[in-house]
Image (cartoon, rainbow, N blue to C red; front, side):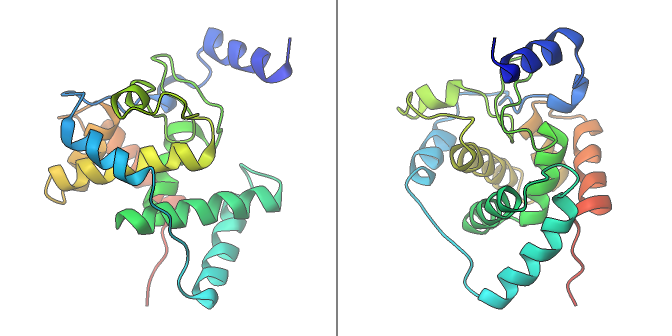
Length: 195
């Protein structure tokens, strides 16, 4: 059996990840508005606009991410994708990093006990809902596109209330334990003070 498969089985059987991999489950899923947003997001691309700012941000975030991803090329690739997706959606890239930190600890092959997949722990039913059953949620680009779009949707739906949006993303609307975890990770590991 492949080592990654064995590791996944071990994690699922032992519950090693516990509450860290709670799935972003929409209480009112499938949401038709979110379905449309995911369809539109699947075809959008973006990148850094300013090379200097990109380099400063990438060097800073790469050093922070090293404890989770040893390969520098992998780190930079992930960080570029996170920045592009977050910027496309109008979210803070550092917030998205905090969500990934809590959801999967940067394990792109993470699977939760309820079946959520990848870095941002996206529920696979969304692929069918938007007519893209072939999408691979373990592919970083795809997972980020879905996860960031879902988070942005809940942020807008909650009229800018990040705590409520994070709770909805996690499927724990009305509770604060998950938003607190994300906010703590953001503050402790990913926050960038802008002067």
